[in-house]
Length: 126
Image 1 (cartoon, rainbow, N blue to C red):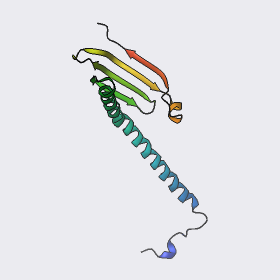
Image 2 (image 1 turned 120 degrees about the horizontal axis):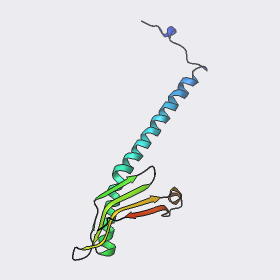
Image 3 (image 1 turned 135 degrees about the vertical axis):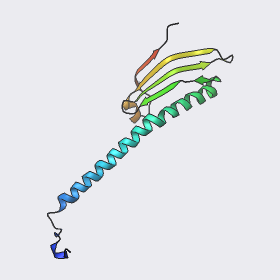
């Protein structure tokens, strides 16, 4: 059995160990925050985008919107919407986009403004 005297005494030489544990704690917390941000961005934001497009289409245009696929990259702030259709009252396509890609600018986030560096649409050839 080890006595108390055999344990190393904590003193002025030990701050590097505490500093190292603080760094590890900060790195772990930072990694957890990045992971949560990525999970929220990749999985929750597309559902919010889909829901907002559909509800605002009904509220503002009084038309139904259908969407096949929504993807969002939280690291590049790029949203891609596939198969966007806004239906007329007789269920015919009023607007149809096979693919809509919107690239948000980071500077817009800090200015509380919607700013885009690129907006692209692609259509199928009929």
